[in-house]
Each structure stands twice: as structure tokens, then as C-alpha cells.
Length: 105
Image (cartoon, rainbow, N blue to C red; front, side, top):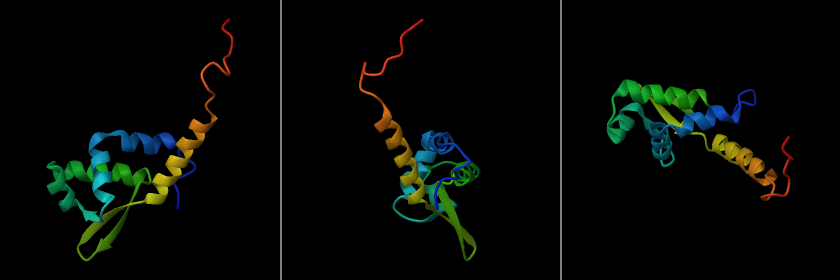
């Protein structure tokens, strides 16, 4: 599964650019966690953690899974790999300084 092709990479980049969401991604990189774990790790209120998780989920960066009474969140490494490939493709097409310069009016 990859980032939704209908959605521009900017959606995922915007989600990841917010510092709290980036910290959530870093925590989820090592294990699946529920909201209560992230509340403890981040030291912010549960509604705020839930909001940030929803943004990450809507951007396709995290998935959820119910386990007994709790919802666990996990990182979608494939989505991050797809985003990294997109960024790499853009970088590879950038010309060296002064090589392709459009003349001014």
C-alpha cells in the first residue's frame, strides 16, 4: 500500500512537518502504541494526541488495529518509502547550478 496517488505528497509532508507528529512517528518507528502510551511519552493531553494521530492516519502515514479494548497505531513504512522516493526523484531532476537557467525578461 502506498500514499494515496490522488493526494499530493504535500499532504504527507505537511503532516510530518509538525513537530509533535514527527515525534509520534519516531515513537511508532520502534513499536506499535496506543494513545495512552503516546500521552505518557509526549506529555500532552489525550485529545491532542488523538488529533495528531488522525492527521497522520488521514495522510496515510499510520494505520490502526483494534486489540481487545484498545486501538494500536503503527507506522506505515511503505508510505514513508514512497514519499522518500518521490523526494529523491525531484532531487535527481534538479540541474546543477547555472546549467539550466531561463533568461530574464
